[in-house]
Image (cartoon, rainbow, N blue to C red; front, side, top):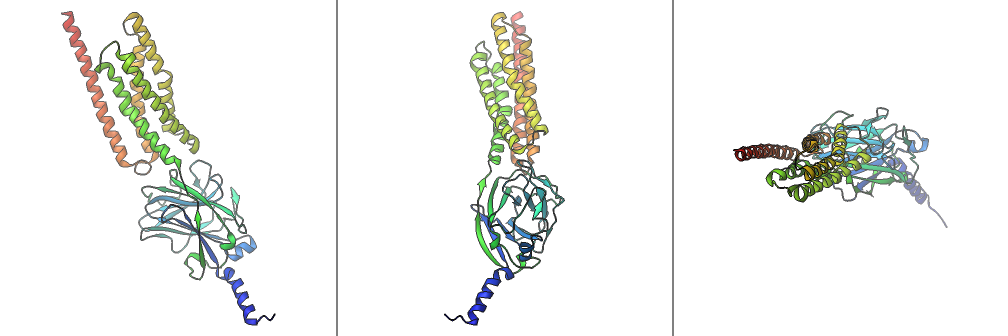
Length: 390
């Protein structure tokens, strides 16, 4: 069998092209429009085990933030978070994953933004050179691996528009992962592979999941807002709207126990988010724990003791006044803590401004209505008492 010199030369060129010209692998999350992540490792980096790795992050400019990270989980992941800095520029914030907590800025990462980075035509692009991606505080990268793990996450919402690399970010609403076959992402010796048209690109899909954190946060806010702003005050007023000896056992107590059960459900969602995020020391969380604990431990007992006293003596006891004023205090504290919760989530970011405004308006109207009915009921009782004495 004769082999021509031309065929040998062609085979040599074909074998040489992938490493000489280079390859980029682009990953697009399934079910998420407009987002992609690309990876390239220069041939010299793969051969020597040291040198830069190139990453590209792309997504719509109206996202709150977008990130990709080396690693299979958040803990110790080498993260690259981008968000809008202005109408045309972006901020790149390298961070170290800390489990189910907000990742914090990592100043030890050697990273730079390359030409082509910024915001153009509604697309946010970060062309990244990383000179410390083969080893970092939480792990290392094997650029010869056929299945190197990466994770990604995105948060929808109002753009941050911040140049601060330590800017606080809120929990993702979608996330996923993918593995990189570096044999398909190796080659080239350019300083910016994403602006080099000679490099070939291949496409792959990345897994996507919808974060439960967003739904839990929304349900937590809705349930407890309804309970503290509407249910607790309204059910407390049944004593004044329906003055009768049967109001407490058949109307007031069952309704308040229902509201308390709903509050416990909302509280449980809050605890689940605390466990996932690790943010247990925030003022909103601490106030919420104290408030719900007091409602569960003291209010039903004080109400029951007063009811038993009334059945035996036919009048009010100290338990009645503790039940009334402690309940009012805890409801007001809960309403205030709801506002603090909106602030904690980020007004205009995690918490829509319209929801915050509606919460304030409804709470204000309920407060005025509650005070009016209490005053009116008290004056009516006094007039009735005065007329009976005459």
